[in-house]
Each structure stands twice: as structure tokens, then as C-alpha cells.
Length: 200
Image (tube, rainbow, N blue to C red; front, side):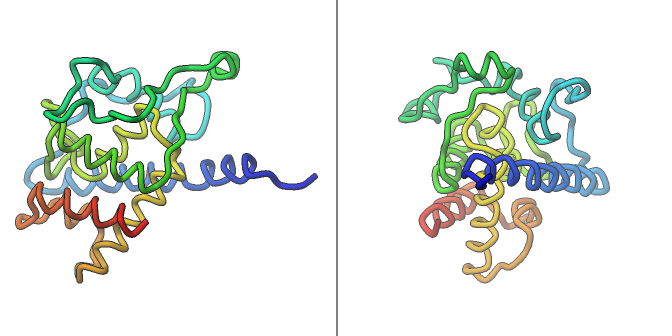
């Protein structure tokens, strides 16, 4: 039986999902060792009993967070951060298969949505997100994915593009280290995400 694009997408999600989870866990462990530990989200993920790879289980949990569900109140000065994209809504197939609705996006679009998300909610250092909803670069990946834009494979491709953009800028260091560097500003983050998107 020939391999289809859908089969490859599932295989990539199964392979890359744990890598993204490992990045989140490593980031939190590093933050815990520093002087300012990362605060937990409002509700700690309860992933037991949920179907799918670990990354999807985390995304399903975060999707239920009212801060992350697109709503008319969730706007930036220029409009909602997802403006121009359909709001993820479950299809009949999603309901039958009990899977979260997903809007397909490219790695470039994922980066653009991250940029918009940070514009709308703010940027932070030393934690995935704060109580006001501001996020670091990794937190922006998680939030955009959790709402339903793209797949773990898309997010991973976007992360690779960010790493490449840092290398082009002469800063070949992990993006999370760069995010938390004292000299990094929110303007730098927007510039990096836009550079990565333009090169993708």
C-alpha cells in the first residue's frame, strides 16, 4: 500500500510531538534552576486519559483555557490576532473521531501568528507565560498551536526557521536562551519572528 501525505503527517506528528514536549520540559526545568522560577499555568495540564500523542494532549488541555479560545474580546489594536484566518471549529469528522479542530497553516503562517499573538498579549522572559497572558517565544508556539492553528510538525518547522534566523544574525544559540537574555527586547522578538517568516 503506497504511503500518502496524510500518513507522513501522522508519522511526523508522532515523531515531533515528543520533541516539542521535551523542549517545554527542558525550558521549565531551566527556569526552575534560575532565580525566578516559572509560575505554573492557571491549571496544570491533566493529560491522563486524553487520546493522542503527548503534544496533542497538552494542546487539547490548553485549548480549553478560556484565555486561549478566540473571542471578540481577544483583540490587538489592529484587530484579532487570528484576523484573516478561520476560527478553528469542529467538523462532523472531528466530533466522530473526538479530535481537536485544526486550521492548516504553513510554518511561515505559524510564525506570523506567533508575532501577532505576542503583539496582542505581550512578551515575557523566564517563563512560558505570565498571569496576564504574555508569552515567551516557546509559549507563543504552544498557545498558537493549542488554539488550533497548525500541527506539532508545523510548530517544529517554525522553530527550526527561528534557529536558522538566529544563526544568520550571528547568534547561533538556542532561541529560549536568546529569549531570556537580559539584552533581548520585545522589538527584537518581533524582528526575529518576521525575519524567520520571510526566510521560510
